[in-house]
Length: 397
Ligand SMILES: Nc1nc2c(ncn2[C@@H]2O[C@H](COP(=O)(O)OP(=O)(O)O)[C@@H](O)[C@H]2O)c(=O)[nH]1
Ligand SMILES: [Mg+2]
Image (cartoon, rainbow, N blue to C red; front, side):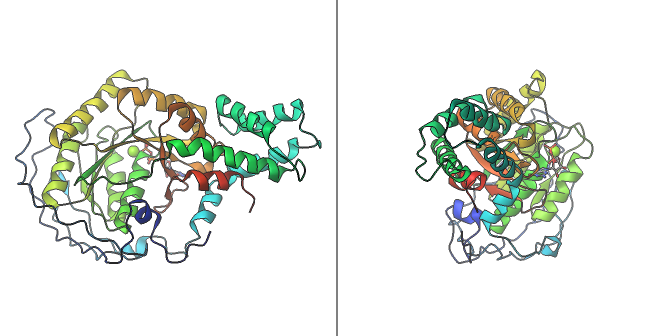
């Protein structure tokens, strides 16, 4: 895959690829927001609806960096991020997107390739070989149902040029793409302004990191973000998120420890509206899908956002740690029951040989995997593309 000077993946996915860089919006001094702990307090007056500016055109290259922001004027509750020079970002030359994806998925794909090769010791595809291939797929966490489907595809495959690992991988790649395509939905922003993301998931699955990455990529694509620190539970959570916000050049709406996350979400939307930001991303505390009261809290955050901005949140992203394999599937199931999850961010695909969980989620829950995390760096987030994913997982070099 040649990459040349294409628009970034996010620009492409957001349907943007024009050549005018988005002008930096002036940063008004943050208005004083009331403290955030009152759970159901009355909405502060909405800023009069500004006329929506025409959607700005975005730069063609991923590297067109917006001008640095003005220095922040810290105010309690709502703060602007400090204008960090972008030189703090990794500057190594970029590998092509596909090479990065392959690299990120290499543990899964290497394990699969090796195991497929070791199973194919016979010239003919007999039941025993099929059984062993199915086992290999289950081990990669494709899930039992998917593995059975793959087994059937392998059994039906044509192997005119011999039963080789390459031939089997080709059959698998095609089958996987066909499973993923029907549930593939690109990561995209609605026309709503601000477009609000609510990010939910189990503790440690990568919510905060992914938010930083999303904000950074959106910023690279010329969009402005406000990040709301809805994880009011862990003391260090706010600081961690603020650091990400700074790196991503996003505004940061803080919370008080133990404060009401719904109020933070409310404030973040208000801040984005009054400053004319494009996107709001609301972090939440990690919770176990088994903790009923915390799931109820999620519903409340969702409700409060919807009251503040009808139609919002426009997307509820659930982070799933790919290294947890099939456990992630159960998490996804239960989170979906609590809130209307619209997309999955599958994180830590680089650290696992269980990348097949993406397939299990798509196949069984029919929730689109929208983004994948393939490293800890700020750039290590990619839109999910079924064809690329299947090829990276199975195709030969
Ligand atoms: N290797 C790798 N690590 C990740 C990825 N996403 C998150 N992490 C790491 O996972 C840990 C937990 O992430 P965090 O964002 O704090 O999770 P949260 O509790 O859900 O907010 C951190 O050490 C992150 O660096 C990823 O895609 N790849
Ligand atoms: Mg977090």
